[in-house]
Image (cartoon, rainbow, N blue to C red; front, side, top):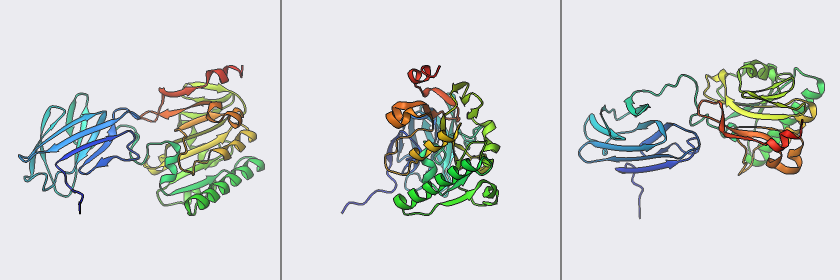
Length: 312
């Protein structure tokens, strides 16, 4: 019978998305340099207490250097050709951070919350950890009713497909929640009080003329929008999924994008109108993925210029 070696001396790890998998044996990737490019780590722990690591598209990583990989409390490491002397502790990992072309020992602490293993996207990742659905109540009676119906649809889909129970609360009940969780916010700032408190600092938001995406406004009065973003209410450690529309009809379209099924191919953010009903993703006005710093990235963005041009 073959048994799996828990501490192999040589590890080759490759991933395209650290939210799906960020580690192999004693190697863990903390952050890539560029999202949605392949991350590659090759690591070898030699008998002479020398650890050799080569990387591609890695900003920060951690190594768990324990016996039988190493035998001393100090280990020499060569990472991308640079030599470092590392003091190891059998109970913890050693973190390494890239600064330009130079690697340094120390904790990875970006100035602004970046995409990480539990806050990476796309919007389906909100459902991969405990989450709560918050429906808006500060709009018209029709808006409140549609938000509540969408919340019930989330709860039904989660019960039907995942055999689970979703906690559904009104926006005025949100502050009473004391446990860390992902949040699905149903309703834009005009009809959800929690959304209203967040939207002003976010890269996508409804405006009088349509929907603002980064520095570009999609000029249309009946647009639906949906995007995932780190939640400042939980120190950016969890995700919030904001769903809204610039009209009541636009809000009703949200029922077709609940991603509680295998193979749901939705991005970090999307803006669409009625053409989505006939063409699916081909009828989306704009969509894309945020960069590592949760900003709109032109290289990760699709603009349906043909569709947009017909609006004018």
